[in-house]
Image (cartoon, rainbow, N blue to C red; front, side):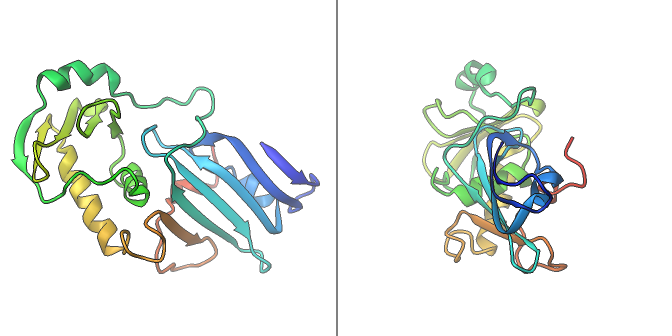
Length: 212
């Protein structure tokens, strides 16, 4: 972690983490001076959809945080276990699953807000980016979804309906103005001091009392 400023509480102007973390250690936020900024990669169990967190302490002492989906991010800290779809690749290629209709065409890679939401609202999923068509797997449940053939068909396998969960996340994302809202389809804002934020997508797990 790189910190600019003194080591006294509330006196860091800039804090930048060079590793991905599953949650923000409270001491990092406590070190921010008014106007200070904290930048880090938030890491879930999936490496597929990294997110960048920017937190700023306002002049009133509140913490304002913006979470943005990104195509790349820092790797997680040592010992953090990521999901992996590579070991399932041959089985998926041999049997993509049972085809069924869908109204959700494969979302574009650039829909960072949607994929960020999926990381939290449909946890345990990981994408195989080397597959010929969009392939999303749930390794813990031995389940997967393979898009196609065509935009109105998906093939699913296993006890967990992976694509149905993505359809649900997409519907919630659209209701939150994800594709067309002022958040540029990838920004999710939360005022930590607000009791009832109008729109909260930053997960509570990012701001725990403890970050073990």
